[in-house]
Image (tube, rainbow, N blue to C red):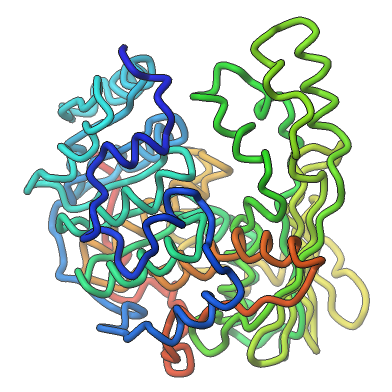
Length: 474
């Protein structure tokens, strides 16, 4: 295939992201991937925003059969697989620049009855798919810097969007997602699968039932040794490695942040107010680049670069005085952990490292007591689909539950569990952490993407209500 090595920023420019798509944004700052005057701009953009419609709790007209187009078939392959199992969907299009990704997705759909149109061969192919009238939902699972531009274009072409994490990389892009979703009244959901992990769903239900008392502090993380993946030259344009050069902060916050934000009713009764962030130095990436460069000249260009450090720690304070600690480390020799600590006045929980635990009265519950709590407070979605999700798989079934819930809400005309304000506020930690680190860990304000509506918005409802009707295809 020709031109597959073209710079992804050129991809965005060539794909027709004109001023109409850059809602309230500074084109120069977007093209550079930076926020022009970060700390003052955060506040000024919040003041300029005039909410057109509140997308929190917004229910779009029901769609009997959801036509889906997928952009990006690496990570996106999981979403193709799980949605293909559901009734009430029609997979209309598959888009990727790489032929082998297309082939894998087509093979995965063999015997499903779906015959999607293929979009590949040029860097505008994804736009052609977005322009179709018979597609309702565009699913975006491309490299991070393409998420927001593609989502904006899709919404402006009358599509709901589901975006892999993070949904945006700059504050400008966060505002674009919010303003475009409000303007078009199209759902903009960042598909954070950890919100659908079994223990995270359990703690959400426990919080809803008052089990923890007043929640005072939460912790989340993405601690996952990924050095081999970061330095894998077969990854498209080595984008994961490039993403960590000169970008010092928490580059992947939402796996840990999303579930605790839902527990704390962020954007629905509380909001993230301000944060500070500190990053340590890089102890491993440059050394790995040097070692690889001795054997393979491809890696010589990655020696002596300003890599993101091993560990970033960020602290967030909410409007109601609760605190959140986030950590990000993808290089050190740690056991995988998202932490997921919930600390309340009556009880607490700790999800990672496994096994997950709950404490009451300053001691961990016994195995029998823990199982009793699980049974008593089992979330409706787990009661209905827990066993099926484990059979299907995908991050222990979380991918299946998330996509089932997305499709079920669209088909029943129900509000989605995550909206454009969640996509923006959770993703904003990426640029805000970099701003704080750059100012010697100074405090930075977190924009209120809801324009004050957080005070009245209702918490996420996973009781299934009028939904829960979508079944597996025969």
